[in-house]
Image 1 (tube, one colour):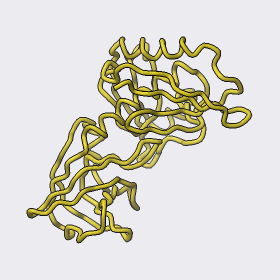
Image 2 (spheres, rainbow, N blue to C red; image 1 turned 60 degrees about the vertical axis):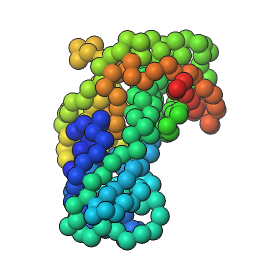
Image 3 (tube, one colour; image 1 turned 180 degrees about the horizontal axis):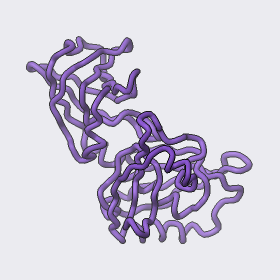
Length: 239
């Protein structure tokens, strides 16, 4: 499997690693990576691989077979041979924006307390789909709540629980369409705020900022009807 360095430290921007496989589609699999693979609505990371005076731009990152992660070249070119040691470097500005938006969506799920049926993240905005029949009446109140959480500068941390513990606490799962990964029998929980009285606590495998103040000012965007019982809500980074 690929060691997920991004989960150990979401702020790590580069790392050395060894090529352990190639995918049939032309991806490069490393023994450890700082690149986050597409999942949970968050896009795969982009960046650069370098080795032996060679340079390979990476367009995106995907999950591969057997708990491995594949870095996808931006264009066809010879891949570093298996066993080659490489240096990987993230497109940090893009990743950091994903972290800000992803954390902001956790706050949105608190400001609008309905089940989440879908979501997506980009470098400028994000959206959640909620299982609610009517659009929120007070847009200003939602935007104010989001920015109050940002101004609180609450700590964002993670913890782990067993699958059995999660089954005993089903209220922690907000996403109705995507179930938390249970491959290793342990579930990662992302907590915003103090352990005793968190603002939010839910299973999540993505990358997040360390404190809500790092998100910056948020702006509530469109609220769209997506079916009889679904509303899609957008939020935007102001910078």
